[in-house]
Amino acid sequence: MIEVIAAGPYATVQDLGRPGHGHLGVPCSGAADAPSLRLANRLVGNPEGTAGIELTFGGAGLRFTAGAWVAVTGAACPLEVVADGTTTRPAMLAPFWVPPLGELRVAFPRTGLRTYVAVRGGLDTPAVLGSRSTDSLSGLGPAPLGAGDVLPVGSSEDLPALTVDAVPPGAPREVLRVVAGPRDDWFAPGALETLCAQPYVVSQDSNRVGVRLDGVPLPRARQGELPSEGMVAGALQVPPDGQPIVFLADHPPTGGYPVIAVLASDCLGAAAQLRPGDRVRFRLDRLAPL
Image (tube, rainbow, N blue to C red; front, side, top):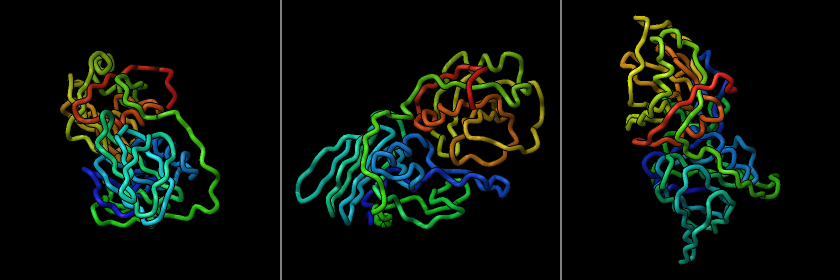
């Protein structure tokens, strides 16, 4: 078991989500920075989709009732393991041992936003529609974590040996690649160039649903709104005020505001690490793979 001593500003259980239920109005959800969760799981020998903890702005304390191998990835935070009256400071991006009744303390990140904690064997919380992820939009999955919560850990008997994978994904970037459309024709001529001409600032109203941006508005060429249509992670949806929103893991399955562009898939993890006040630019790439 893992006892939550402190959860920081916002912590949830996340795996790789529950895809395939959009026709039921259920978002995919899952880790906002999926490459970081995949890496954390590989480091402790778990399958990449095993459930772990997603921390927002760090600030967590976790007590392990039994010894466990742990890995921490994503936004870089100072780490401490306190056990038997001694304190050690393990590194991120490598597996480390937490002794029985030891406490892992995760401080606040210097850069980035979301940090991932994987434990060998994974979190064995109940699955809903095939996923253990907390969905902040629909309310599916376990509630956000709080002090006093207890998380069961799965068996590690059949897992492979530990390995080290030192390629850190999801590092904050200043430039994110986008491809045009599918509704760029709803915007005034030059709107895509405007999107890519100057930086936007991440709003404090951002969350796991989307990164809200403040900057030069993107004017429309058409009035009214679209009928609701399918949305994907990475879509840059533009409401009537002209300020784009980058959809993240908990985005709604459908939306009625036009989408001027979509992030390249390898930029999603970086977008999830943007924090309020960060500046980000977009680069139009007509050949970018989605």
